[in-house]
Image (cartoon, rainbow, N blue to C red; front, side, top):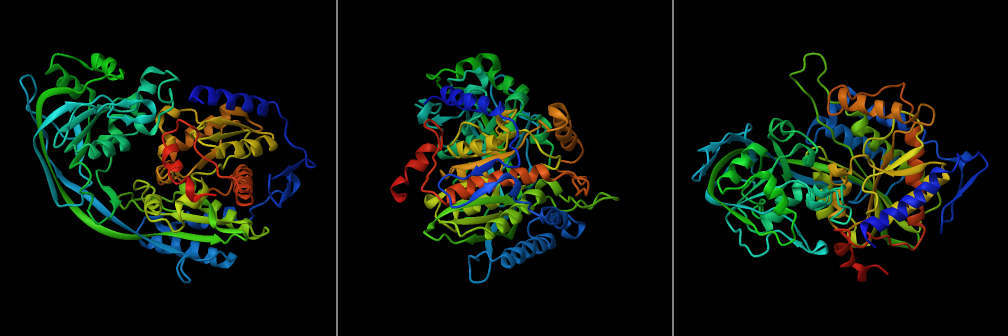
Length: 561
């Protein structure tokens, strides 16, 4: 089934869903293949949700930064609650999965020096380019590296697309566009149309270039295609975090970075072309990489600091299939403290993501009050999401429970604090079959499901669920939308916009006793129902055919019976 026809089918189902009115108190919601029948009048109240959010986002927890006192308090709070409710630990009596991190601080980045007949001598750091290294080393240098334009830098067999075909870029500097051809053309039959695929995400482009042997990778920044301005990539904190591994990231390119469109125009002018022309050529399947007839040099010096943090994992063992797992995930970390702020130093992260972490604890407690599930149900609070999805990436690389036997996962990141909504946003709608279960229960709440409003921004690749996606695990990332049951869509949109303006990743993201958490509880009821159905059935949901993660999941199919 093509992406377009699949979404058309989903759209028809959602249209029917919109027509439903709210369930009455006597309406029943029955989970398929489950021992449990839930009456809407008996939906879980999750009574401790507000308490968990308030505690986790208090000043005492110092913004929950990894490897700080805030982490110690947060991990202890999680473990105490997991132990109190009777979740099984993963290591003796401990719920902690140690995570080894490294902080990479580029204390000195040179200009990008260039050689070419019609080129300036250099592109200046942060004004015309930005760069770093994720190799765990004190210093790296790229010298006189041949520069090659490689279109979108994509190798996607399922789309019959290979921008590196016919060229060896070992030791070279590759330059490419951000996002993917679907976004550039808005053609629903090309990649995933306006919705970004992983091939459009900048992280993929660095990974693929490294696999191709490139020494340096430079992405051309365009605000619409990237979904954020130049200031986001070039003028924020340059400090990077990564996982510690045996090869110290030696398999990555020496240097990763971005260049402005103005810088790109200068590179293209050097070979007698321009940005607009190369945009058109890059959209052709028979695109041929372009030698930019230039050489690039750069050096980066780092300060390194190794850290140890923890994921916190507890589980309910299944009664019939204990070696099959339904997983819930939320990130417990936030940004710590801002000592330069004279009046408010703590990044409390109440919505982001004390709300999701509190929801994880409350949901786990609700599960412990139900009949023992047939499959095991796992609750994972991960660290270092704000540092680059690192806690979830560590779990994906070092799974406590086998990923090939993980039925599916549900991620909770920023819960609804504005009251009940009519709509439920499925981030990455049209990607995998878990969404069908959610859509069913969403209808039974008298609600309707929608795709995120800006799929071109690649939100489906920017939260912890993505770490498991890359390993093939079907994972659901959903949240309340904007269509408030009393105030309507515009009011809901205004609340989200105000949060993004005033509070997102700012010290103003604080707990408010006036929040209406009934909407969050409404969503948690859905998350419970989805996980409960999976935990008491023989379903093995998969990615839809044509999705970039389907082949990874299918490769382990013989381990799932």
